[in-house]
Image (cartoon, one colour):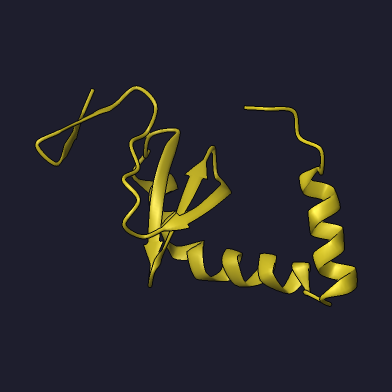
Length: 90
């Protein structure tokens, strides 16, 4: 990846201050929407990374925290796994 001229923090603050995006409300909405999936993942002893799909968004969970959001059709494969014939294998 090339050097980043504008940090993620700067983009976030720009969205908050110029476009009045309520980042904390977005954070709360994501947390609420993924709560059941995160709890289920913790109960079954899921891999360190897994995905929760809600509507058209795939949220990637790493060590209990939502780390990114992707388009639903993006093919996610956790570290240490391979995708073969549509199935995850170690």
